[in-house]
Length: 156
Image 1 (cartoon, one colour):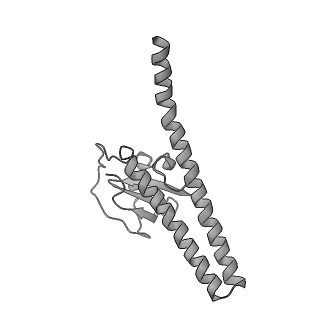
Image 2 (cartoon, rainbow, N blue to C red):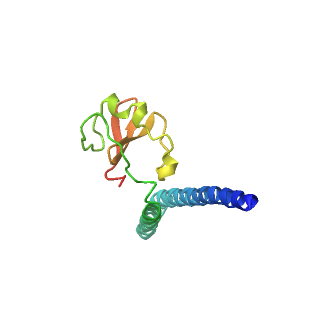
C-alpha cells in the first residue's frame, strides 16, 4: 500500500512538470514560426513583388495570432498560475505606458519576476527585467529605467 501511495505521489508531481515542459516547447516552436515568417517577409520585401509581400504579411499576422490564441488558452486553463494572491506594493498603483521612465524602487529585486517562462512571458534581453506592478507586468530596461513593454491586468 505504501508503494502505491508513493508511486501515485511521484506521478502527481511529475505529470504537471512534464505538461509544462510540453507547453514551453510549443511556445518555443510558435516563436520560431513567427521568426521564420518574418524572415520570409523581409526576403519578399527585397526580392518579391507586391503580391508576395502581401502574402508574407498575412502569414506573419496569422502566426502572431496563433501564438496569442495559444497563450490565451494556456492562461484560461492555468488560472491558478496567474492568481494575484495577497500581494501589494508599498507604493501606490500607477498605470505605466511604453517608454515611460520608472523609478528604481519599482523594479527592485523584490518585484522582479525570476522565472518569466512560468507565466509564458518571452525571455528578457540583456539589461531587461520583467517586473510585477500590482496586477500588471512590465518589461523594464534597468539601465535606462524605461518601460519597454506593458501587460495590464496580467494577474487575476
